[in-house]
Length: 197
Image 1: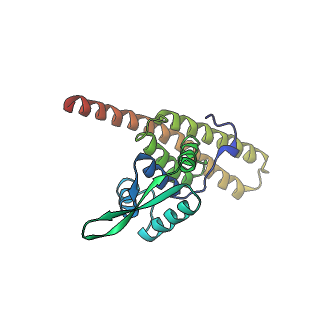
Image 2: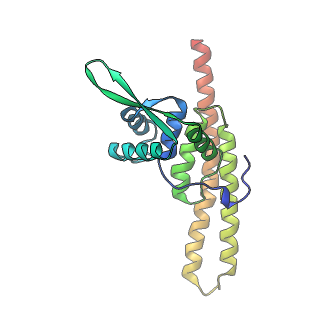
């Protein structure tokens, strides 16, 4: 899916897509999903266990996931969740879209997309980075045009816009580091697989 305009951005900044992505990988119960979210993406998403359960309830009410009671010997029953077809479609649409061009959107949503790109075979990390670079360049062009239209004597507006422009420029440099990091990580994985295989 190609990014054509800002309208393809499907936010909002919510860990629901991280939970959908974990369920895309395999069915799991709520506690396990929360633990995986904390372990793998705890520096990206700060979510309490009760928030995780609330999001799962909402996703189930919306028809994106379905829970089934699983019996356990000598333990209370657990509710195991799996994606529905609409949940799978919602996750894949999100995965193939760029995050917005704000610092928070890149820090939270883009990193989450990159994580799932390295853990699924539907899209490459390079493709995720390409989409995000394009989104940031569109944001940069927009901000530069706004800055050019602001009167020169409006110093504080210029300072605010300059800061936002510099942030986006630094994100482009950081995205190149992401590209190197995922290639390095992929190479290490391939070497470990060949040694153990």
